[in-house]
Length: 375
Ligand code: GN1
Ligand code: MG
Image (cartoon, rainbow, N blue to C red; front, side, top):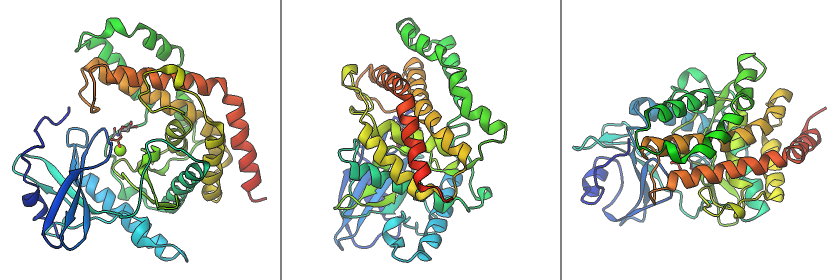
């Protein structure tokens, strides 16, 4: 469910006074383009800048577990980076601001949950990739992120959203939405359902390989949209953000979700499907950056699974948008009445394009891997 409480009238001063922020807050502005949480950039008269976020507690039901995950993950990343010469832990890892009781979030009088991060100044994020340098840097950032977490104790992580990237679970939710037809929209999604049904078995491959013990579960990011990497002014990767869904999963999921946003020449919700095509140069650059950083821990079966992830993630994203459309737009923020259907169609058009080029994409992955792989 979306949070319906209006944010206008929110007493930001009061909320921020419960955190260890310095000085007097002089401005609070909406920030970013996330579909789930609400983010604000707050500036204080000391010149410090903060990212204030209202956590969507209808989506994230275990707020304490979520915040413990983030605290543990950022601690681990910082510890690792401190021992890597040339790295800058202060700028390469998100830093939480404590509340006045040394915790990491507060609950306000309306039952909303809030947290604060130090804002990383002089960084930017892109909803769409423009250059090969950006794609390469994004690949490096997510590859390094996985590499740094590859020795973290999985017991320190709780599942913030169980079955998040489990396609069987997502398809079962879609089937339930079809059966319930809560928004009376089932009649308008025949083509989309046919698209989904033709690929059900094919898209379970990663899960099957995981169950067979061929693919290991690792701690992954689970939301590797390109705009979740902050780049510096010269477009070098600085920091991976949005750690809400860091949970165990298969590396192909992170690869696929990044490719979903990087290779597409159009936005995630492009209404004109003819504009959706593949930018192969950006794909190649991403693969190079990613494999350069991941070469030390990836296994051959994992590398072979990456292409499956690239097909699965836009499919799964389309299934999720379609489910929400049928449910009556309860999960993702929408900006027009048919937005979730438009997003679904754009994601399925992308799947079509990826399927057409599957062999070329696979060759790019394998030839890059063979170059990096230590003999
Ligand atoms: C949501 O809120 P945002 O943009 O970080 C969603 C992702 C989707 C994405 C689609 C917790 O992420 O899984 O891939 O929208 N996050 C959650 O744009 O569901
Ligand atoms: Mg997110």
